[in-house]
Length: 149
Image 1: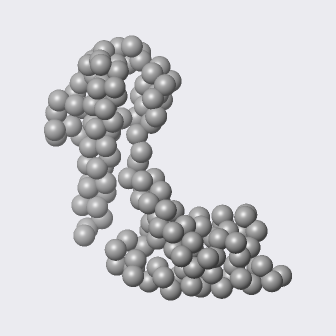
Image 2: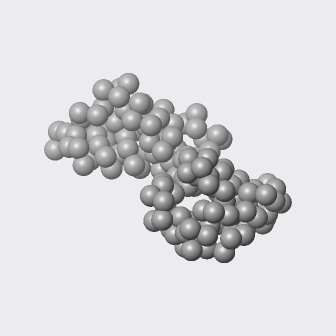
């Protein structure tokens, strides 16, 4: 996939996530996107255009998101990268648990191993995910070594 197409797809995904987030907040608060924007101190069309136009080209800015989060006490939208990392953490902890590896070293060493493995898995993509068990095995051996030192 050409780089332009990949970045274009990522931008479209982010815009889609922001649209869904806006609609969910509107539903929760029983307000229109225009009402949310106005109450958050934004231009009235900031959210309505995003929601109404399926070809809208711009994701929300961090400033816009921050204003909405602060005004209404809602959680910010979860980025695709963050979602993938969270899923990778869950898979990593499950894999280490299956191997009874969570007690092999200090909590900080295990936490570092979880983050490193999850980072690797979230970046590996489907092409390398089948190698995950081998990478877990290597990390389990490292944790065993840390326990014995």
